[in-house]
Amino acid sequence: MDAISIAYENKKSAGFQGLLARVLDTSLIVGGAVAAAQIRFENLTGDHVDTGFIAFAAAFALALFPVFGVYQSWRGRSMLRMIGQICLAWLVVQGCGLVLMFALHRTDFISRLWFAYWTGTTGAALIVARSSTYALLRHVRNAGLNLRSVAVVGRGSHCRQVMRGILAARASGFRVAAAFDLHPGAERAAECPVPNIQLFDDFTDFSRFVRVENIQEIWLALPLSEESMISRCLHEFRDDLVNIRFLPDVSSLALFDGSVIDLIGVPAINLVASPLSSHALLKKEVFDRAFSLAALLCLAPLMICVAVAVKLSSPGPVFFVQKRKGADGRVFKIYKFRTMRVHASEPGVIKQASRNDPRITRIGAFLRRTSLDELPQFLNVLRGDMSVVGPRPHAIEHDDLYRTIVHGYIHRYRIKPGITGWAQVNGFRGETDRVEKMQKRVEHDLYYLTNWSFGLDMRIVLATVVRGLIHRNAY
Image (cartoon, rainbow, N blue to C red; front, top):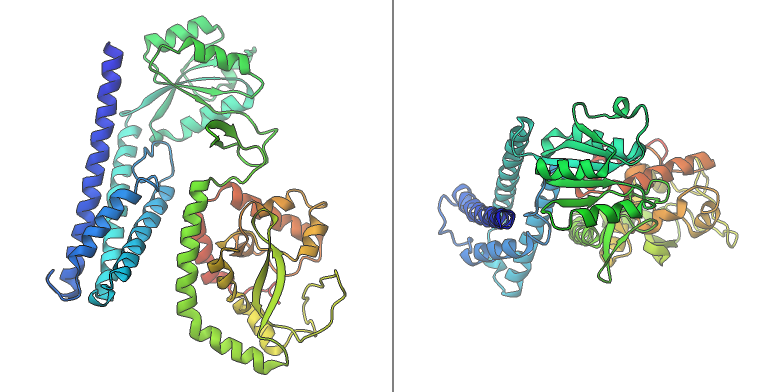
């Protein structure tokens, strides 16, 4: 009964903390609106402040923040990713609020400047509050408090890697207290990356230690072939209140990190599949649509000027349209501003633009150097064919060529292609006249897929704006 009481108290405490976080967020949202009103109107009774809008935003936050994982435990996870989650969730809340106000025909009563102040002030307050809490918990855990003890069951390099990860991430709140080695050797103690921990090669002794020392976590750093040991651990501790986590060693099998998903109610490990979860894809989709709509509205005057310049530069259409492959190999039509003179090409053969290519017009050369020819692709993003950030789509003929000679090439299409990408901001853009260039581009694309986060997308967008618009390889 003592263990059950402790578990109940922990659950009740977590529930209270979640309630406290929701109250704090609601207070920050309302407080941000008040602060924005003070800045804009010096009071909250201005004609362009809608208290109903504020109430709707608070309600949307209570409903949507949990969907974006804002209230889940961030123990052992990245603070930058947490900030990205909060920013995205708050922007979606404000977007939903605007849509509702538009549907109620109340947007004319809302001050745009007040809304901007409110969004910025509350967003900053949410980030500061979460970051301060995160930093405080890191400090507490670095001081040796609020820790969860972990016993690792494993073998070989993967087990040592897991223990090194725990040791390196002291602020995560985990500490290695014991390890059970399936195949102990003479150099076991010397190879152990964590000093002064209990090492076991007898499972009975290991189990007794876990219970006596009240170890809270058992991490199974095992290959999939060790099914018997996994079953033994589950059976041994089936009546104990200990978290058992499986960190499978799938390095020899999986193309990407083997993430665990729920598939028809059954846990499944992705060995060769999109590394982005449906939850992550949804967040990316929301951002893409909102960003592309805003970009098209802001860039409309520039795009009209470019269209006129292209039309006057040489006979032919304003847009260049070509078929490309999207997510999962679906074919779509990509739009660009035309940069070449209209010419006949050999069927089934795509000749890439090269330096001093005579087919490129003078205005086309400028558009290519500045990447302005890519602006119509925001229409593709708005239609759902592309993403703002992702692997750049290539001509279908190039896909057929490189998929068999460049390792991992086809897996670029596990997600939607992007207007810009990790490869492009790292200098891998333009003509691919050698296989080695394409291999490097693909390596960067696969790195992006494996390490995707909303923060990484923002970093790529910023890098594109700051240094990626003009590049020596763009011609």
